[in-house]
Image (cartoon, rainbow, N blue to C red; front, side, top):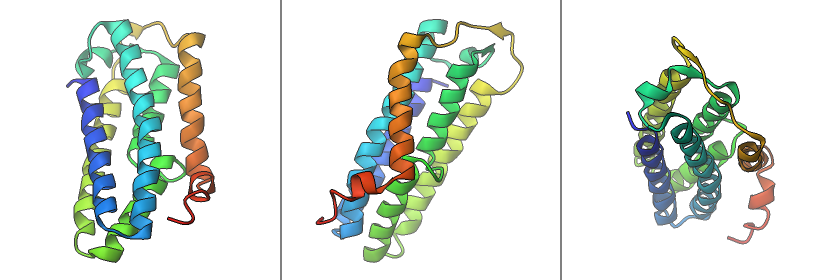
Length: 177
């Protein structure tokens, strides 16, 4: 019911994957964990800024209250952030999860299912949140994002896309790891 708390749960899930990847003591696991940290910073930075934008407009973080009004740009960015957090291919979260999963699989084949389950649960509650906030019956419109709000969000979106589409930007410097 609380948007910020839901994003925090997603953050905990991502850090759990990163810690497990590091614990695998494999090169892929270490690279995956580092990639996850960078990806996590971008994605959760985006999501927490969006949470703040909703809070400023509605004076609440309750999903049931903020889902009744239209703000197309704000809603689109929330969907993008939820997809990135869920590990959608082409976005940085996907590369981070795949590398982490491969590293863990190389060390503990059966443990991979716990990570996959964690990622699936995260995707499930993020998509449920999107359904409640973005879709459904609307009661009116609310002020959308201003230019000043849009600039930092656009920078985070660009980073998420770049790391998702050009993984060598971060993996290149990690070659010796």
